[in-house]
Length: 107
View 1 (cartoon, rainbow, N blue to C red):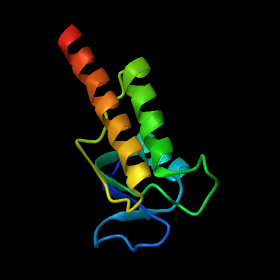
View 2: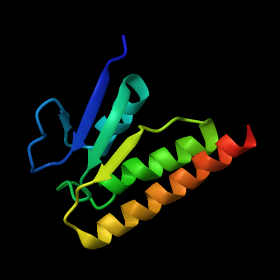
View 3: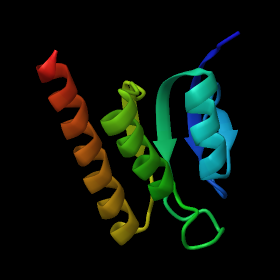
């Protein structure tokens, strides 16, 4: 059974009430594949390895949209205080949106 959820990715800040709090990019990716994610709010720095950040979620999402016609959550917010990480994540979001727009225009 799929559930409609809002996902909060952060290792330090608590999730707002009613949100599913996760601390790894792998958890977010799994939830996007198994549940209906209405909204995501992503932090960049998660206190893990350099590769395991909120950016990893958006790289996966961009690839899934481009190659598998995956439909992303309707709302994605970046709440990272890391300015460089935030910029990378914003660029990945824009690229993923571009892939989605191209797919919609091809139909």
